[in-house]
Length: 270
Image 1 (cartoon, rainbow, N blue to C red):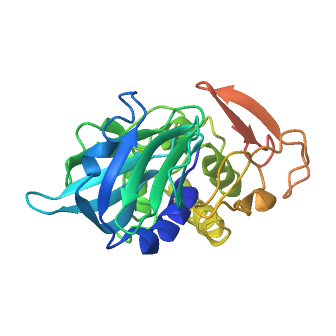
Image 2 (image 1 turned 180 degrees about the horizontal axis):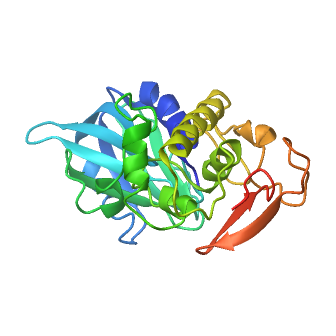
C-alpha cells in the first residue's frame, strides 16, 4: 500500500497539473467507495495537499461553500493525466478538466476510496479524522511521540500502522524504522529514549524515500507512470533470510497481529 513518501510524490506531481483547472465533468464506478467522485464537477482546484496517506484536493465552487476531493490510493490505486477518457476496465473515476485533459483514478483491486466532503469535515472517513501528527511536524518531539505511543499497550508496530501515534507510516517504513532504531516490532513498551530513536529513524527513512520518489515493489507508479527507486535502498523490509547489514545475523519474518514483520533477531532482541 502506498505510504507517505509515495502519496507525497503523487501530490507533488499533481499540484502543478491541477491547480487552477476547473472540473467540468466526471464519472465513477458504481461502488459506494468511488461514487462520490462526480460531486467535484463544477469546482476549480485551489490546492493539492496530503494528510497521512490521503490526498486532499481543495475545491472552489462557482458559488457556495468550499469542498475537498479526498483520494486514498488503497493498495493498487493510481492517478494519471490523460488526453482522452480511454476505456479501461480498472478505471474507477474520471474528472474532465476545462482544458481538455482528464484526471483518471485507476485501481485494480478496488481497495482505494474517493470522497467529496465539506472542507475540513472528515468525519465520514474515521481513519483520516483520527490521524496522528505528521512525521515532520516540528511540534512533534520525543516526549510527545512517547506519550502517543504510551496510549496503547498494543505491539509497537501494530500501533504505528493504526496511524494514531503518527500519520502515513505503513508496513515498509515501520519495518525500516524499527530496524534502524533496534526495536523489536512486537515490543509493547517503548521508553522515552527508544521513542526518540524511533522518531529519528522514522523521519530519516521517510525523507530518504521521498528523495527517491517512493518505493515500488509491484504496483506503485507516479503520476507520469514511472516507478519509485527506494526499493533498492531497503535495509530490512522484504529481506527475510538475508544477512542483517549491521550485524550479519539472518533477518527473520513473523506474522504479528496479521501483518508480516521482518526484523533482526540479534539487533532487535525482544
